[in-house]
Length: 264
Image (cartoon, rainbow, N blue to C red; front, side, top):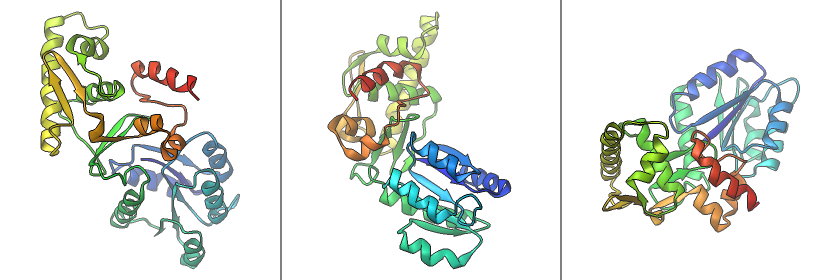
């Protein structure tokens, strides 16, 4: 999930950012000391959850929350404040949570679990959720899925990008190692990645999410809830999540991004 923090006190801003980094489901954090700048940023960027201080000089958090909801109605709002008297006003805005400073990890965990339960795409009945817009990420039961090798995640990302089409080993290796000349070494590593991929899905209880034929691999799209796949179907929540980025950490994703932009 993408998160923003808005607090005009730098120490409070830094402390909450540091705490949030302990939660793997938060894949991206953007911070602001000035609410007006946050509003301008939100006009061009999607966010899943916003942590807002209430007592700020430039714009109070209640007014900021209204602006956030106008731009992104599906965004979860969690107020973070040292003043308990604002709780009733927060409830009237139907916010997702209310945290008192200093923020305790246990309370933050509770609020994030609640947000995950209400996430418009993560509420799909499938166990596997794939995020393609922004940076690529895959969630198993609403927690980031882990692999033994970092490159396994990129292998999966490419298979997701191909939307269920079978890809040859040679094609995949050409994508993953564009400049690697040692074919023997490259194939040995690829076999490790392939084994890691299948073991990860077996451990997740989803052994049929990835399939193989002789010398080829593919995902089974129906086994995943994926923002890109939902975007292709015209799902409004997925359409709202797209903000001009697709698998941003992988250069080969630019080709699909170009086709997305052409269809806008």
